Amino acid sequence: MTASKIKCLVVDDEPLAISVLQDYISQLETLALVGTCSNAVEALLFLQKNKVDLLFLDIQMPKLTGIDFLKTLANRPKVVFTTAFREYALEGFELNVLDYLLKPIPFDRFLIAINKYYPADRPPFAAIHADTIWAGKRRRAVYLPEIGQENGEGVPERNPLHRKP
Image 1 (spheres, rainbow, N blue to C red):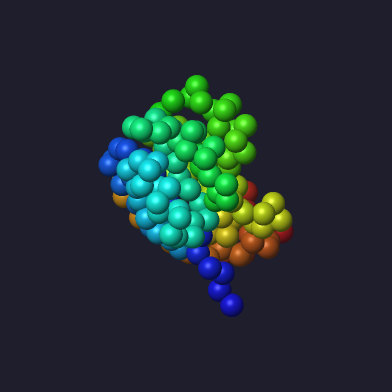
Image 2 (image 1 turned 120 degrees about the vertical axis):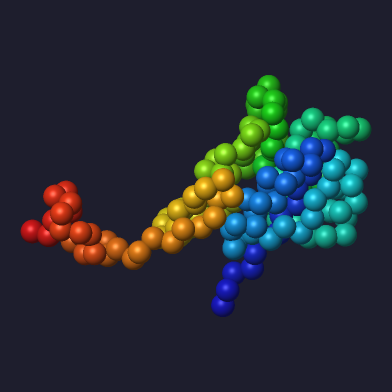
């Protein structure tokens, strides 16, 4: 039985910020982007009609800030704030958000936020996908050859740190 994907919604008034998060989400098979909104009012309408598990929410937006928007939600999904402003971090965490990402968001920091979505007894995302590294500007997956974990199996002999006894 395969686990269902985490349904993500991105809310940001900056098209570039939306594009970056769309790219990051598309690279993880455990995530599904179900929508993007350019302001909190659009997001409210979207959430009334759609199930969302994880909300990536900008703070500085026209009409209604991300913080004020979050305070209006009764049954809210898990939230990761995405913003260029450090000064809202404390207030963000007081609202019990998963994480607070500062723009520009590096991919490795995005992965840390995603790991916080899962229960503590689940291995982190990076450990599950340890055979993959992300390379290049577009962060494409590069698969590494399988290397045995016990006794350095599969590690070349020329590496003195991993020689078999």
